Amino acid sequence: MRLRFVASILVTLSTTALAQAAPFDGKWTGTMLGKGGWEQGVEVVIAQAVGTWRFTPRGTQGRNSPCLGKEFPIAVTSQSDVALEFAVKGASVLAGCIDQAAILKAPSASVLEGMLEDGRSLRLSRQ
Image 1 (tube, rainbow, N blue to C red):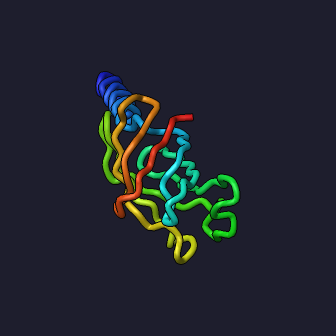
Image 2: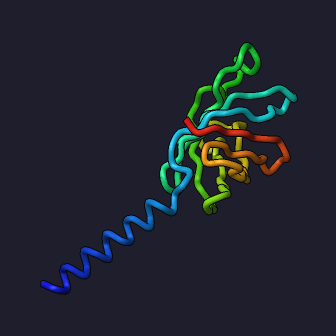
């Protein structure tokens, strides 16, 4: 009986620690600098160590892009209380779409700022 009690406490503590280890879970929206030099809308959803990336329409720019509106998988590669790194695997869904790593810092609980591995800027706000 005592062993079950201790085991249930350990499971509860490890579940709580796991939930606290993912401070960036949720929906984020923002902009990144597109390859043509214009701002591109982005929506990112993170759940633990995985998520999705989707380009969102902003005016008429990029509206003919086959990558616009599609959800691409992301894998979180590193996160702390103040930083997040993930890889977008767009080419796994559609050849020629974004395949980049992102490195972001959190100046506040509701903002992520940084860049993609090719140097383009990325800014996201928690929704």
